[in-house]
Amino acid sequence: MSCGKLAGGGDGGELTGVRAQAWSEPNPYGMVLIKQGAYKMGPSENDTTWGLHQNAKGVSIDNFWIDETEITNAEYRQFVYWVRDSLVRERLYDPSYGGNELFKILEDKNGNQLDPAILDWKRPIPTEKRATEDELRAINSVYWTNPITGEKKLDPEQMIYRFSIFDETAYALRRNKLDPAKRVRNTDVQVDPTEVIMISKDTAYVDEDGKIISETITRPLSGIWDFLHNYIIPIYPDETVWVNDFNNAYNEPYMRQYFNFPCFDDYPVVGVSWEQARAFCVWRTEYLKRSLTGANQAMLEPYRLPTEAEFEYAARGTKSENKYPWRQETPMGDKNCFLGNFKPGDGNYTEDGYLTTSRVASFAPNEFGLYDMAGNVAEWTSTAFLESGPEIMNDINPQYSYNAAKEDPYAMKKKVVRGGSWKDVGHFIRSDIRSFEYQNEQRSYIGFRCVRSQAGCSKGKR
View 1 (cartoon, rainbow, N blue to C red):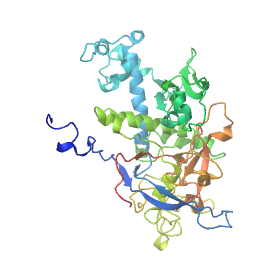
View 2 (cartoon, one colour):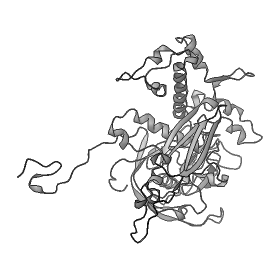
View 3 (spheres, rainbow, N blue to C red):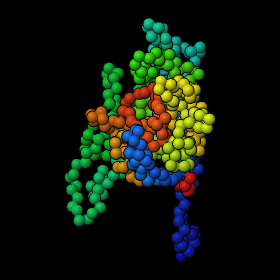
View 4 (tube, rainbow, N blue to C red):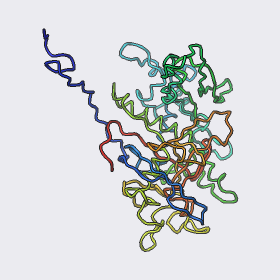
């Protein structure tokens, strides 16, 4: 006897399916949706002048969002100031800094005292004019004054960001299943229930001397927490790159001004390592999640660095055979106008209008609406560098990842860099040219932009 409508089904016992809850992903601010498609990844012809060998490989890419421009000084400064403000709030809560009562009495709806780590969005920091003596001491504690020049600025040593990354790939591998019976599907194979699975886990802590200790530990698999990697990263850009990258050059003004002067707000941030760029992506994800509620947070795809294949696909534009982000076969347009910021000739940096970096979006976008995909600053990708490159990658969403341990040889800590920069000649800003840098290195000519996989179903190719 029927007792009404079956849950999730229709009358008469017919299969009708249970629909998933609909969720409309908000369009990410300042990003462009690149629709799925296929292209030939890598150089498609030999170039004897540069010793370039043809090694193009057909690959397909799924939908993803990508920043219109490189991350700017102003955008990265928001990250730095968020870390600064979090430190100040924790110290306002700390009795050794006066124990500001306004922060100590904050409670949640259940009457539980709030963790100071989340106070950054609960109450603004007092301005110096309105701060009490204790508050002023907490505010000033994150600054450093040069005893020689008297310059007061944020203390880079204190600007550290703690975050965790769950390794979904390692957790998903059958060989890492907690239940030994689920590690092998072949029923002819006798599973060893006593087999010990070893897991490598990145961890970090601050020792008694205030020094950041990062290490990779290897231990027997014991639970899901073994796949959670913990990091502590100093995130302030290295302003000395302008001096260290160029011997016998007077670039000291850039060192003092580039990250701090308002006129450089909309210029691409530089002096940021691959590790710092990854930390920014994690922070940006968490920052956005705080504006969402419930299941929407879990459904949000995280911000991340683009894969090498995604960057090349986005750089080539709608014509996947393009060598550059524009249709021309050279970095010069009609009437010898420059299409990007690069080094036009021997010792000549200024003919394109800029000596070093340029304000983002100073040149015309490619057909996707993306700016500076060639030149200005080269950009980090998430792909680990191998000479063989795309040859060893899958042909669907190609990617090669290697999470180098601290103890690994330095040569294993290379990451792919794409797009070329203001200091490179036209050949090196081509969309199909790859380079590399070490993941902890910081350069005056390397920046980054973020991507985010589209949440939901792909809706046709571009």
